[in-house]
Image (cartoon, rainbow, N blue to C red; front, side):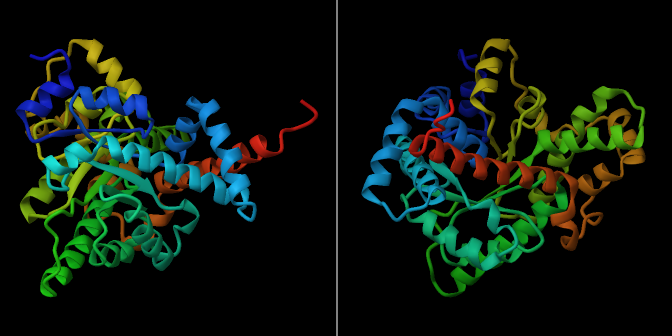
Length: 358
């Protein structure tokens, strides 16, 4: 086996690695371990800007002088765009190698637009033109489902985010299929489109644990670490059976099983940089058939029996589209993304108008 378990998996299975960060240094390391893509969201972007604070502080100052009418919020988003464009350049070789299916940098739409499908579609189209290898994230809310069809029809490669459940992944896959078929019917090219649908497996686990605390559910705590994995495996099985052209992507890592238990399929794994470093040091030998192995009944049965929120995540029919925006994991994640958007604006404000009391 090569030094990196990620490189070994990439060289010997269809499973590919995308780095869960647009930070250039972290992405360069991940590429050396076999990464062929990268993802970004408001939390990740804010962290990347803070990690290279000297550079971005100067860029904010320069940009504000060149664009005096821009608000702090607009300046912050301009920095995210610049960060994304720079990171996308590092992925161009993979983009060419995989003909657009990989080699993409994910840019997140403004989370404040989660109730507006048209605004999300328009912004997705705009972001997709920042570089040839951009893939755009849209949240899987009730109101946004239609945006997946329309943005796909416009030629945008999409990464569905704020997604935790089998029901959400199927709604996304069906919407993207409709968009692809509309393009095909009109003779429009789809050869370089590479849509993915994320399951934030660790956040699925988190929400099940919240339910356990709120309802006083007592189970072996280890089984709750499998909630996201079980949902992912079930979604993958359905995707394979139905032949969807969207790939699944695993994100929001909480333990190494969020990588090691879903290897071998035509899927994307997107761990944070810190988890890549950790797994590279672990000595874990990848099981390149783990995606095919069902979750044991001793784990799955109590999850299904005791956890209403897990049943909504696992069963295709237990979470209607009308409830996507109200699902607990969705609300928790959107709140975090919205806070990061406010924090990004505050970062710009602190650069341009430092607090004189400090």
